[in-house]
Image 1 (cartoon, one colour):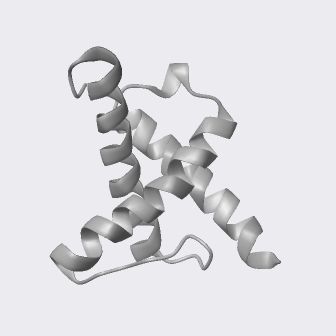
Image 2: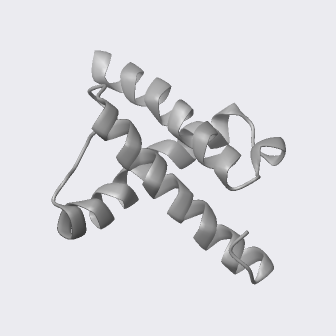
Image 3: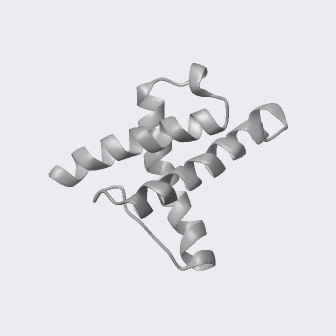
Length: 89
């Protein structure tokens, strides 16, 4: 049960950091930050695992897990921007 609470908190922080990097902070609320951070963790593990040999989970707090989640969330927001606007930023 505690893992889900940690995942929500770390996912929210990761989503918020990614939204700052991608200049989308004003258009996203806390719920979208949590969703982007948690989904970004999955995307980040798919990218960082095979390419860099690292992985991290947002269910157990670690700096590696947070960085992987932020990386994945930035990639996810970049893809969303590309689909919506035709450009990454």
